Length: 313
Image (cartoon, rainbow, N blue to C red; front, top):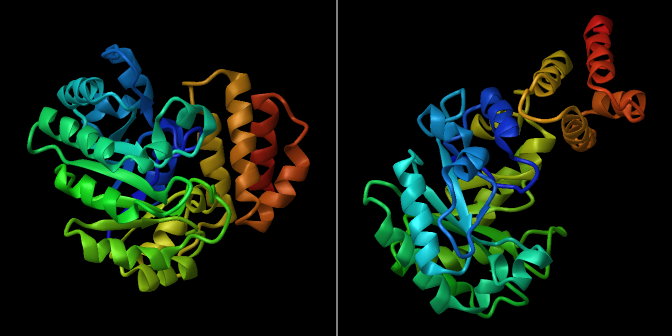
């Protein structure tokens, strides 16, 4: 079973990728999408989204980082994919799942799921531009407003030369509201020969096992559940719910987060509080800590509160 850390804008940035891949074994992770419009992007943009390019395309713990692009211009996507491949990206992924209104309004992300022929042309252009040894993949939802083109899109992606397809088992209209429709995935698997990776509403080991059973997929992509429960990857990998991080281990992980030097103090405080808010869904101790730190606005105050947690334990 392959386990993949999902690309999530504003969540699985380089800092979070480093932390989560240090906890357990992911087969690979994927960057937040890089928006391509009408130009070949400068190198610093690639390094900003994927600083792992300077480390052989891997996180500090050795997990490969695939670079994801979003756009609708086949030539520009191809140019940028070829360039990031030259810089050391181990694989290229294309985003046909983003539901954001601003993205869809500019004909990117999930809105393209109403145009299977365009999706084919985008994937093929990137596949043709990237060296053969570098995989090209795609991530899609079941559809935009409906599921009328689900199989058309899957077949288009396969015939364009993709090595695998990740499916977020909801339409754009469904957003992130439960449930994810894992039962829709077997039809996709029967229609294409490339591997299908299941994604959506996997928050616990029980969810993972049900998704594998219902979808028939052999591989999973973990998203918000992995950020909410950093030890989820270990629970799922070993099919063992006892493989949990202790609260002191999680506190140390949070301290490591606050030691990041790549963000401003204000930005890091905001990102940390966002993450702690998500951790409250997975750990009772995090909910108690949240009450202690929600009004703290400085890094030193956050560090002191976390260090106090270690002292109390």
